[in-house]
Image (cartoon, rainbow over all chains, first blue to last red):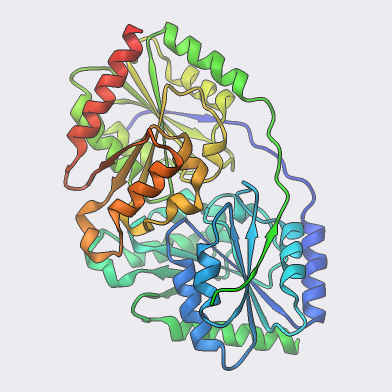
Length: 223
Length: 223
């Protein structure tokens, strides 16, 4: 049947980012600002999901959004229309944000009045997973058209996330996507990952996600 | 209306990869092996497109495929069933392939009998665009569910590709995707880019794409 060689190519090594991430996390804790790091592939629906999330939570807490992109500011435009505080971060070609870059964003956004800061990371399932940004929690979106095999191909991302939002479930019937298989693959990598199927377009599942986020922000402020 | 600050974060600098890429290209030219570097986001349909491409061309030329992934070998399994020669490259966490890594893959695959070598790069719209792999031509896939704004957000990828395959056009009616706007955005970055709408699932557009590839392989061998 299937026959082929597997060739291992050498890995690169990253510098000490973890210490800076821990320091940022401590500072944010002191200021009672919860930082969510939201990651996904390009086009999986991060910005639309954020728009719905902000609508669900904006009367209860102050929300600030950092839109990280290689270029353009289309997402910051979209988010600014929700009334949330927003800042666009241009990464100058960088494919991810590390803790130092995130801190630059946090300083730009200002945390003093922010209960929930959200970093919309660069659209990429690889590099952002390798860098602790100093976030309180990590969330990722996988959209139905991308396929249920993604936990097999990008295992680190699924391993480091606290929540997996499976988006675009409104088009489930047009794609060959097995939600149960996807969830099993994710939980094999990360037994504690919470999986929430949503449709940012129709709003389905958004309240469950908002409720999870509400509880996390509350815990962060109390602890 | 929209109001926000734009913060420029510092860029990283890459080492000299271009020279190695030129050398690899020369070697491949001498061996009359055309190398296609195929890039896209995760889940846009690279492997399914390859399966159809191989079916269209395998009686005319010898095809070898390098499947680059962080982890797993699901794609190599799929491709091996087409009868094409295939090798799985594990990048050990790396988000892209540079010329040296591609050469390791080429050596693993062997070029002597290969007319068309295809590198299925890691699913990522950012990093792979920054590294010349030594390929004869670059192609990318953008799938309809990802959205028509991607040229604005990942401009380098659209700039360095010779062909843009717009995949999953069979589900066009369920998504808000403006093909004309997408094409205009891509051509603004790269006036010479060839745009071919396809559905790897139904086969629509595959013959146009195969014909383009056929011509490129022919030119490469003759020149």
